[in-house]
Length: 486
Image 1 (spheres, helix red, strand yellow):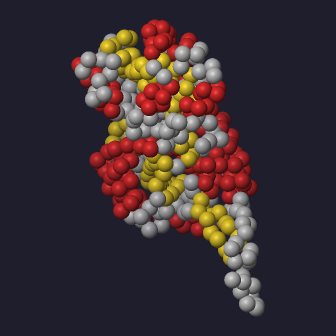
Image 2: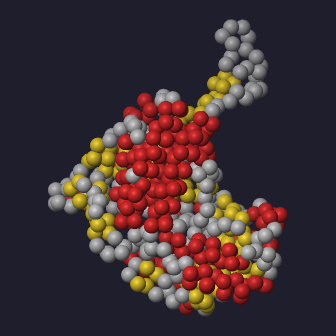
């Protein structure tokens, strides 16, 4: 069995921080357990970065950036393609690490691998176009050069649920732009996240191009602020929950650092009466249950035309029954919360038309709800559970209004056989992504994957993701002699 190979002074298997390409193994008092959701036992240990280490990580990134930003775009492209090839050769190990730490099932880990390969290779292919400047006309009549330049060292904070794809996508985009990265791992999967750093460095990226830090929950705010506050740190990317995003956003604003965010959602699926109902039911069930419902754009609401509600609910229950829940909650705390949101809805009068909401270990039984009280927890907040609720509407306008009624705006689905109708509805939805006849889980390596409203800002993936890490420089070419044009 593959395990972390390093130990602290107490003999614990540890995943240490890595600065300038070298592991920094700390005394055991810095070690924190990474606990399996399946067994509730410690798998191994991560190590909390000190503030001083966090500062050194930024300093290493800054020193490397001064050289790395001058590398040719084609060289970065070749390094990214090499990283993808290495990742592909070691994909079984990548899946093993993710499945071990996050208790996900093989299909989710395999999806992460496939999506990672697509994201890194697309970043390589899109780099030249993303970095191409232009020569727009100027009002003064003199030539104007517009250059695209990397912003500098960036802090990247990604969650455990899409551990491979979310980390790789962000790192690849930043490196393609010519930036360097301070990568802060999730305390729930540091071994998985360290795999990404190992891969990019093995491909030949400079030692300080991706520095790797982490912390336990107690020290997270202090370590994060130490990085953001550093004058050399130029931008932040955060993917995670809205409450943590708000806190990091405040810290970034305090230090005048721009931030990219991808937060949660209560992603809706609109099912029209002309849809292929069996297909819609299957995809809604998958969207709700994948990774135990712990995906930021998993399906949480189904908005269905009232004329087909009963028929569709029956098909949806069959689809849930034939598509058992995938994996378990990442921690018992997540599992308990998932159970509580359904219990709260039932206590407020909701009907449980499928499932029993029982907790077995860290896994909650999937469920379907109707007649939701607007004040219930599940109505007002992201459930992050293998459950969804059904809302009946009488027309397209009501469906649009219900879909847009929540804070989030990450991904929505429309199921219909009429593309003209589907496009009209899609154009009214306040979501960065709209899928016609596909699950809300869908995303594409070419991008853009953008959160609207309370789901964040910034377009990820492909050329759009690279552009997040670029800034513009305008150079005006006035003549060296004679009068300047007006």
